[in-house]
Length: 303
Image (cartoon, rainbow, N blue to C red; front, side, top):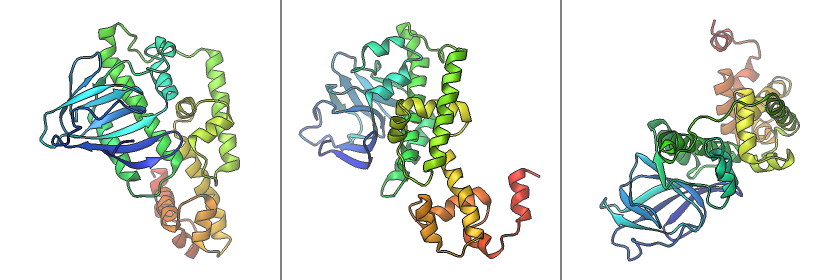
């Protein structure tokens, strides 16, 4: 990373950061080639010209794509210069995100982004801003971050191929319908992930570690699990933790902070917030009166 980058979150698989360079800086026009595979959300307007491509106005309505070692130059538009937020992913994740729309991507694994930029709809822009603010200066669950970064990647890739793919003659559909063999394989993978989580829900397993144990890729695991279950790995694990906590809360007067850590939460407040969102009352309230809370049950059951 360069002197212009601020890192907000990093693990072995994903990194979230911000870049800022003002027009007065002597390196504004050229800060060197890109070090990693990035999708980038501009916050100011700047003209970006990737080597061998036409110049693009990078503003908040687009998402920019960079392969590793991509050379480019910038020209000022906004007086604030170039200010953007970026998400680093693996090239394998990009290949898997693009393959349903562009099967030839498997033949260019080192340059999986075929577009310099794509459209960015309002929902995606809001989601990436909320994700960045969630990790900035906070302790967060790595699995949750990885899944969200990959989910955003899926969204921006799909929209780019939908809008721009037709210009290149690429298939902009959502891909062919999975056959019986594929559906069976996907169901088995989701079940294996459930089994792993049932044994390790209190551990802070990353998406990368889960995928390694299940002999698949992080991107594929995240996508298949959501397709098969309708929920994310993080949400599924959180429910396992919270439901396991019920018995321990009502049958013990042990310290709730210790229980939170034992279940894999970062602290008492994190556990309490998750518990209340799920059950409508705090662990302390449940411990004081473990009888069913009729008002909460009615709300949960939509009665």
